[in-house]
Image (tube, rainbow, N blue to C red; front, side):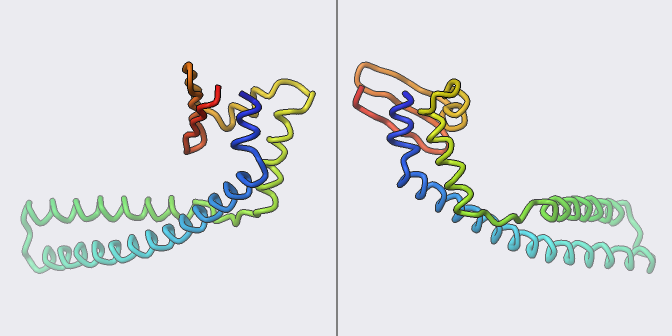
Length: 151
């Protein structure tokens, strides 16, 4: 098991590809955050404008249960949008350092074959499930699946 993990998932080429993909996904998420923030801000302006128009209608005498219910619905929507914006603002925008990620994954790879302790903790970082059969070993972990027919 340790040999398969080290050979197939924690070899230098795979580590570099994995780190590049992590950085790519992280950059994409940062772009999505900016898009979501802009979209929510536009929606917030729209909801605020509608609520303001309803308040003006109430002040001019157009007061009904339906208008007040719609105003309450818009206020709830505005609060939800503001909370979503606060959540997005709290999300971290840390830039990932490729060399540090490679070093951490390489250290895990080295830990698998070191004489110090058990490789169990390192394996658990990467593997969530192992299925053994007569002809295959199926390892599920991280976000992909590796199948080896060499048992």
